[in-house]
Amino acid sequence: MAVHSERVQTQSPGSGKAAVASTDEIVAAGAGRTPKSGRPAGGPRVPARLTPYLLLLPAVAATVLLLGWPLLKTILVSFQNLNKRQLIQHLTEWNGFENYTEQLGSADFWRITGRTVAFTAVNVVLIMVLGTLVGLLLNRLGTKMRLTLSIALILAWAMPVVAATTVFTWLFDQQFGVVNWFLDKLGWHSMAHYNWTSTQYSTFFVIILLIVWGSIPFVAFNMYAGLTTIPKELYEAARMDGAGSLRVFTSVIVPIMKPFFLATTFLEVIWVFKAFTQVYLINKGGPEDLTRTLPVHAFLEGFGAQRFGAGSAIAVLTIVMLATLMAYYFRIILKQEDEL
Image (cartoon, rainbow, N blue to C red):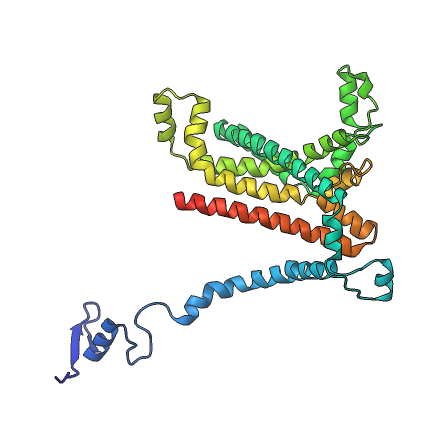
């Protein structure tokens, strides 16, 4: 059967001119084929599909350059015997997995690892509990009080870590610290010249207070942002059923905000686990290395003892631990998304 090509005229209502189209082009467009003009009839063109990836390319390239290359160098150094002699003489001595076997067989490494895990757990629990309470408070306050509290939280969150650590060092100074002066005025005269960095637990108390103080704003603002998305009708229905504040939190807020709690906890675990500046500047891992965490341990072994191969191995092992934790949390988050 022969198919004839015909010209179809349609009258344009706006201009009064005839629009002429070929039935071949109409049939080709309906079948999904490319018409004679060469423009594809269905779906975006190839450059349009590549546009999102091209837009992400600068950020990916910067990430690979700034993070990927140092990570690769750290991994390479971890397989080398790189000490002061090799560094001065520009020697490259490969020793395989010797640095890793040394650390994994060291009782000090596992003691510091356990201390780091406990340190992270205490910080994250305090950050999440206090940050959630502050977020709930932001949701209940009036406009003026909410603005005042938000400004205070922003100032605490925006303060550089080194500056915040310096301020806390002054506050807890043995001779001229405001904390010791205040406790002395309250009647605890034995605290007038107390050295907060003289014991393991008092040093950790200062470090934990510093980290929690700087982390609460992030959790509080995220919590408040999530609470604004919950319809008020759910609160009213819960109140009509006789639910108190605690029951409203556990039955209404927690199920809806569960993805928030998972994601925020995951981020705080990473942030606290790799905390270096606060721990090092307060007392450099002292007294007697009793407040060493894995990041501080890697730095002191690498740059302090100039055992760069061992320090790099500790850093890589720390990254592996965090990567394992990330994989576990990603699994939980993906499972949560499937349930939703």
